[in-house]
Amino acid sequence: MGSRIPAGLVRAALALVTLTSAALAGGRNPGSLLIFPEFDNLGGRVSLLTITNTNADIADGSIYVEVVWLDGTPGAPLRCAETNQTYRLTPNDTLTLYSAFENPNAQRGFAYAFAKDFQGRAVAFDWLIGDTLFLDPVLALDYAISPIPFTSPRPQKQPTDVDGDGLRDLDGVEYEAAPDRVLVPRFLGQGPLATSELILIGLTGGSQFTTIVDFLVYNDNEEVFSRSYAFQCWTKVPLMTISSLFGQQFLAQQTNHAPNEIVGYPLQESGWFEINGNRAWSTATQFLDPAVLAVLVESSSVFESSSPRRGAETAFSLGTQTNGALLPNGILGDQD
Image (cartoon, rainbow, N blue to C red; front, top):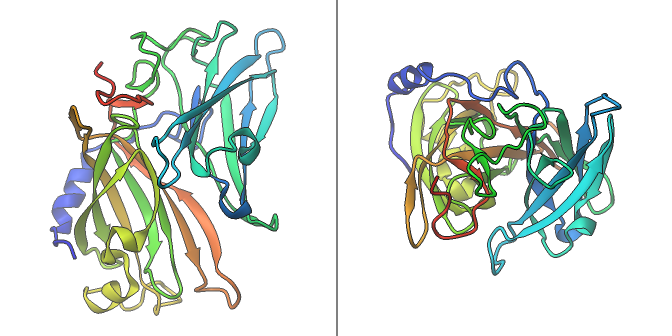
């Protein structure tokens, strides 16, 4: 069930941590690298991944973009195996990719895209924005997820691979650092009226590493509970698989919850949670305090008399973590 932690101590610790992403501060801003948290080809679903070049300079605004698809299909023989494609975007150009056509051998997973020059070198180019739109098998709108942008501190159109390892390092040198903590502002109590899934991406170690993340789960009355969960590389997992702490029954019957929340619909419980990397390990080595990303995909029929509706929410972030990299494939990870 997890253990209670004094909420005051947790809030005090969070108050000492500053906002991380320059690309996200003050709103979503263009970046040189975009992480698309999910694509899904299962059951005839349609994922449309869009990359747009917002640079309007006719003389110098063209750029190449490499898209790297990572296969997160459960049971895949090689977790997060890569499929790569490169495209050229002219000034103000936009490109939309149908994931099942571009990457037909992978059923689901995540992707990232980064700017390159005509020589094939990764470069700084803080002009890229994007989106992923999900349609159900009958082409009805399901939900959308915005990519997480990362700017580069390097001079624009200058190479970013400072250490020459062929990886996209999220270390504040090649690209801005990854978040230290991720915060999800709301979840609905899981039960007959709400069934939600959490996307988790491990940014430290790579495809051969298992990552443990620690959760602090708050109810609607400032009580906090703890839980840990392990995954490899990428996963999309029901909240109730992570812990019964997210359950409607637990929140309503086993906590000192606020009786009048949700305001206007008090029969439905809600809360919020924080995620922090604990440890990432392979058969050869380990990294402490790994960087992770998260997106909540919430499905609810609480306010609908018909079928459930879904929506996705990219988490907020706090602090910086300099040990992220996209994406080592060996058992040693990125040793730089």
